[in-house]
Length: 151
Image 1: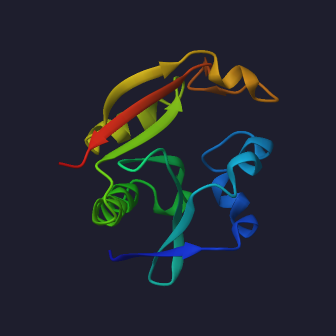
Image 2: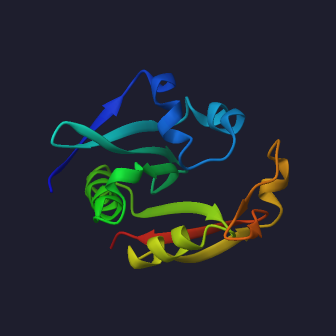
């Protein structure tokens, strides 16, 4: 599988894809114009999206990352991470951050398999969301931040 990424300017067209990784459209819209948005495709079919925001001159954050259902479990997300690692490292970044809900057990496993390590917890982060959400029978309350050094 060869994944190709492309930077997107018309971000609003990709809200449905970004919503795969965030429970609140209002929240997605609040960061939609920040950073850079990339779509990922395989054989001409969109398989994922990533929105990345610079924190400072050496750190960038994956603010939103989603893989379409039909491409999950095939290494797509891992390839997306690897492609962006190369790109951001060539741009001078040395650290990638990503945050996910305490209830997103699959995401916590995935990011650790990609080499990210626990960095911090933003307690009660998701209490600001308009509606409560649950995953794996757990209410999403805290944002778990993970970090990867790019060596």
